[in-house]
Length: 369
Ligand SMILES: Cc1cc2nc3c(=O)[nH]c(=O)nc-3n(C[C@H](O)[C@H](O)[C@H](O)COP(=O)(O)OP(=O)(O)OC[C@H]3O[C@@H](n4cnc5c(N)ncnc54)[C@H](O)[C@@H]3O)c2cc1C
Image 1 (cartoon, helix red, strand yellow):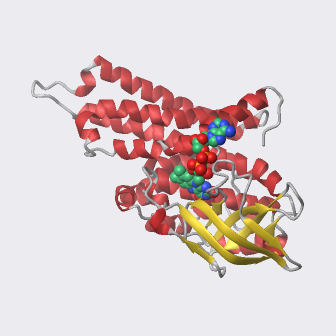
Image 2 (spheres, rainbow, N blue to C red; image 1 turned 90 degrees about the vertical axis):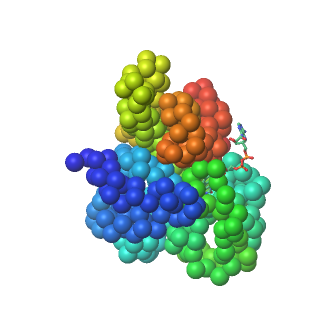
Image 3 (cartoon, rainbow, N blue to C red; image 1 turned 135 degrees about the horizontal axis):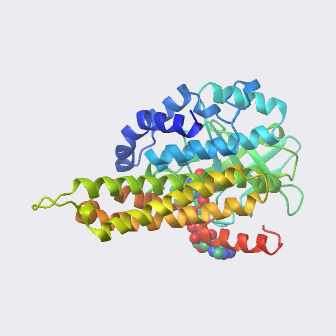
């Protein structure tokens, strides 16, 4: 069984059942996450010799895709965990890796606190205050949108480094004095159960043993592991959104019958819409899985997959709403939920507009930030 198939079986049993309710109440999928821990999904990327499943980028993409088919919000939270974990495993010290792997194998998970109110989508340009002393750093300020806020046990956080123009990446434990969350600030259009909200940092003190990698290596971590796993993960999530929108639209087209006995699915225009959604979903999925497995020119492929899947999710949602008609619009079908979730794809950093610019630069041998 492929990781995708295993993840799909798991998601149908443990993520799907609460997905509508979590959206309606904008609440975290606690039970789904308990089950993820129990079934070893948090340890997907931990090497086998450290007690994990030894997965890499393709397995990350397959799991995110399958989870998103059931609940894109839950998949988003899971995806961020994988990204933070992978970054710690790649750049962390042996002591950090041991501690984080133990936490994860004990059922704890991680998140990313990178975006700020000021720098917005350009999260590689943090404004948060970082004052360095002999023992470590004192951080003051706020991060703007933190998925899994208050639920994850460790948050990767980017600050400026001591050296001008460089960045540091830190592993911030939830229980650190001075850390709080503004949970009332979350009222997302979609992705509602990711409970993303501002993180406030008030005189937060971190020792240098919390810094991931060498001083000033944050930029390399962002461009390397974080970007690759994050952008691929988002591509997978929005491919999953496309796929479910196709399934929902087709189910509705078959089950919606008229008094003369004919079905919506008998109408050629509807068939065309279903075909268009299917083509988009299949292409997004193929592009994403191929990019995740690419050995050459991986970065442009990953960016292309992310752009295509995010744009396609919105287009698939638009067409699925048309097939679903008034019932879909009136929220009698889950189509509107997936359409709302789809809209996050274009704005989540790095957003589609920024990614297109980066892609153009890469294709013409220019550096990206
Ligand atoms: C559901 C959700 C969950 C999130 N979770 C997290 C999280 O866990 N951790 C985290 O750190 N962040 C998270 N974010 C934050 C997110 O990734 C972005 O940083 C944030 O949404 C962008 O902030 P902004 O609106 O201030 O963007 P702005 O910088 O104001 O940008 C506004 C728009 O302009 C576009 N734009 C800006 N500059 C350029 C440019 N140079 N070229 C072309 N277009 C440009 C952007 O793409 C964007 O669409 C989340 C966001 C969402 C929607």
